[in-house]
Image (cartoon, rainbow, N blue to C red; front, side, top):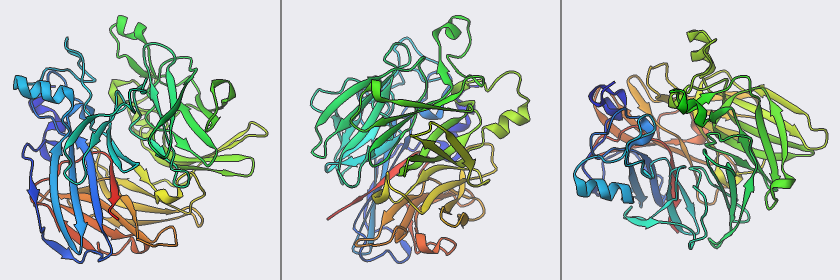
Length: 459
């Protein structure tokens, strides 16, 4: 497939090149008067035509931000100016290959996946390298952030910030040489306190993890990387269906010798919703697939096409790991395909009643046609539909200032109308999921489909 025909470079997956700063955006409805902060979303946006086969994960990171204050909204978008981005800008062309087709120049840190706000610092994240610090509200790139030179591993795109202690936990994985996993804890003051190696039998693509009040949970899933496959001319990544999934539970400040591994049938998880403790049990909730063909990984040549497609569908799922007996119980929570799960992060690592996710659209390309609210206590689901021909992204939960209940707040996401070629930020009341958005902020340019976002409250 050539770059010009690549579907991830067409329609609303195509990049935008203009960096704008626009104040006083049109608003349909009314912005909550007590809402004061900035919604920022990260995503891939290649500045030049890519070299060879382009994967959606390859594009240069671009931030789209909407600042809301006093019932008004402003917009700005900025490229994340990584070292690789700057080298290519100076050359006037793409220099680096991507995940599907490496180049002699190697690859670059694209900083395009997600964001975390910790110790009054915004970090843009990409799991293959170090994070990049971003100035708020300008969204200008400050530079790579290595925790005062203490960083010795890549940083996951999904660090976890404990809402009570203020600590931030992250991991980084290595594919070619052990230790294949390193785990780090950062203090509430932003100091990298410790990094420990975790033994894995082989390198795996580990995108996310989870924390509870006292534990950290790693997922050693069978999307493996093996050099011998490359030597045979096969894709480096493969989903090894006959290999079980392993879940490692480690005390937050523990070491490799203290981890306990639990096995379950093979599966893949890109994103966790939450985890928490319940007596002797550790509860993990995540979007689970039976297998994955991401990165060209084969789900197994013995599978029929229909089975391969169905097993790639993510469903909300719950595991229960008993620390006393070593047993594992697991179950599907709902049969509606969904991804990009989020919660009210003031409850991260603690028992929750509500979870949210993007409702997967029945389209060839990965799109969401609505937002889901899961009531885990009553095993019910409510849907907010974006409407015909309208597709959106991850719903970021924004707590109402001073809220005392878990669902008192709003979900924010960008939505693109493919029939009108217009984009907007919608704000949905979490306690009225099926209602129309309480506000729609009209964007001054198209917002391409992207990955993860965050809300930064201004005090």
